Length: 75
Image 1 (cartoon, rainbow, N blue to C red):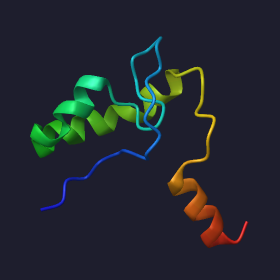
Image 2: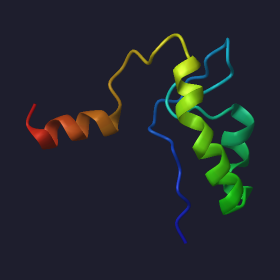
Image 3: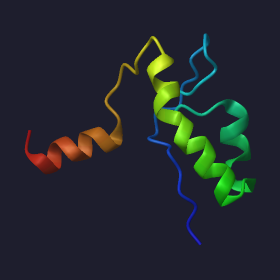
Image 4: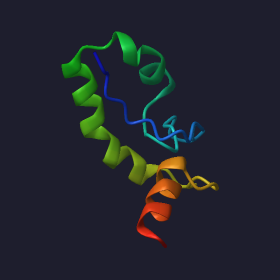
């Protein structure tokens, strides 16, 4: 059984909002993710785009997912 996760391997918490710069989850959500029901995870994931918009400082490094997409697209 695979558990879907919004993690993009940019694990750094924004001190102002408490959201991860990479995925938008809180520390508590990250630590409890495996124990959440599918419905709970889907509820959290629905709120992530809006949360990420509230984070002022963006990650300074390129994520693995972004790098792989760039390399795949030949950019």
